[in-house]
Length: 284
Image (tube, rainbow, N blue to C red; front, side, top):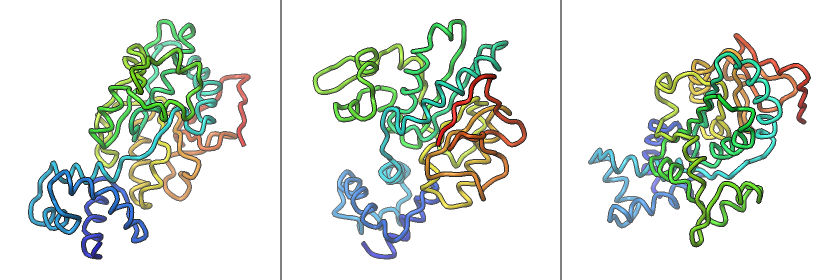
């Protein structure tokens, strides 16, 4: 790939999605954009670059952005955050939200929906305790294709074998040929929408829990700060923010502080998540 073409695509992706591509990722750009070039009946990436420069076709720009921002996901990824949610966060919210019986959860950059559905499964397991409660799970992603996949809730054998306990597969999925579809009951627990984290987050409303895991690693420092501060404005004062294992708020924003003893778990600095009495789930 020509240097000028790489620079043009990198600038385009940074502007539209926040994704930062360094020169050593040229191979990734080539492998993901060649299918886009073929879809648009172009010979290769030089033709694709030339078309982008001369014709600002939003459909083409969307295809390029989605090809580069579609990331891997899996059910109960890394497991520990879900253990913390079930054993610490949820019991605390059941106490602190008892008067209004309403909890809102956001799965940011949800990809094909596995994280959001993992949370729905945990909440389904706690159905008796949640009787009379209104639970909202919202999954958002920049990719329209991923949002449609998430809404359909259809996964391959490989996808359901990665991290999904067999009891959840039996309870919540129906097999159709070589695919598995998550139950209608769980699909109704989650709403998915197309959304860009770089935009105005206020239309999403306020959340008690935000999962924004393994997203910031793709951004530069100013973009990380923008996303974190945007998320902070949408959170309840005693809400919790989940980040990925390689992510932190340190050096990026003072809007969050760590939840003591809980790696990867943060809470708004102006308020603060306080575990319910007796709950002391400490993680390494």
